[in-house]
Image (cartoon, rainbow, N blue to C red; front, side):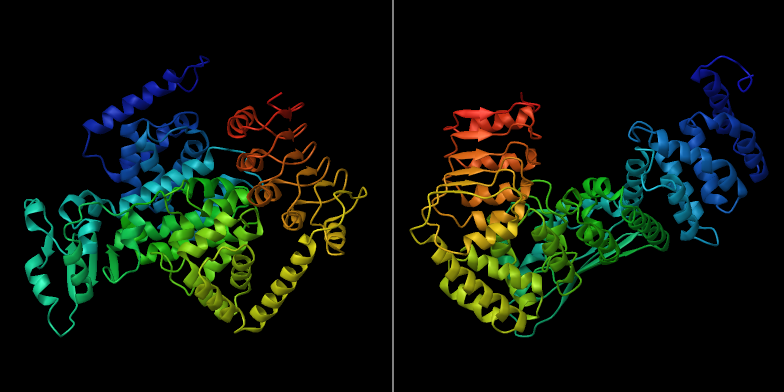
Length: 586
């Protein structure tokens, strides 16, 4: 009746599904053949309806017990495809997610294994370059995250009975803080004994071991760690996640061993994340979903997991689109991102800095060639940068040259060390000589003299502007018009060298967000700026809030939003003339 009724109502199809669910819960003695017969019988009802929770549990059980059954391929495949295409929130129906998870694991148990899973992922994406179903990727990522979490779940659930990250870092464990009734064994030394051992002349490794039937975590610490522990024993503040997992004397090694089943699940779903990262149209959304690092800290401490996930991060670092590689950075200030995790000294770094250099290269090549980014590198990663430059890495040589050029380094000894590092390789010596030449040209450029107003002919390029500014002194230049030329953001590197510039006209050029960010850091005395009919967006316009001297700003026919306009008005106290016609803020 449900299949032949002309009435269009969800309850007509749901009613028999719910009846079957109830009957299954009341009959636990059915044979495997009975199970398959029932699944085949209700298959037509599942073409346009999600299975109810109890039925999902029944399907999960069948996937676990008979993963090679033809029912899995013939009946469950269209059901899972429909779930991935149309489900809006797995939080409201977690058993749908669990069923999808078990179905994928069942595919992985077939003879072809991951090849079958790969074909399934490809079928969900479709043959074209753009997936027509916007919900597929978020749903697949949700399933992957839940599956990866489940691999570490038992240890996470027993976290109250295992050493906290602070305790692991300090190298001690208080038995009185543990719940003795849970099945977890701790081998520990008391703080008094630790402090006594620190005075011994012989250096010995003392392991702290936490075991469960799913996970084995071992932390080895030496007597240097013990000394640091005794110094910090009174500090009650909980360190942040990445700080706890950084390679340091207090936590010299940390290994996690999963059970065979958990290891298979982890391998399957990390491989799916790698597959998802290979699709160009999915990569921006995938990078955005993974930017907050939505994995448990146990996963981040697991060498196998971070090593396998490195492929995904490498794909982000190789993508030229800013919306992708910008997700390598932290989602907000004060929180570490993938860039920090995979940089030298980070918990996930397993190479000599190759991935770190690749990430820096792509970030520097887009819109992050700014003082702020260079300053963060100088403060946190100067050592790795110098080491890689010493080994001839061209990106790091360029970084060190920019630090010198923008006066990022204040300490004279550090500057001399950077210069010595640059002169130790052929590529470094060449780029440092080019820097010295630019500095001499800069002094000549900024020498007082030359015109106060300058207008470039239409269709002039970045190269034309560079050639003109290298021809003499422009220390007096206050008004520069590049209107209707072909200049781009690349010319910003020359514009920031004009010390007296107060008025800049960029009307109808290809000057974009990256150039605006650079101008906002260097031309803080600029008073008049014309951006009419340029491709700038909110991302670049927001940077203008640091140019407190601006009194006239033309953003006519740009991609300015109303919110950004209100933000600029609040942060630019001297702004008197503003043109926002033909924008959202108009």
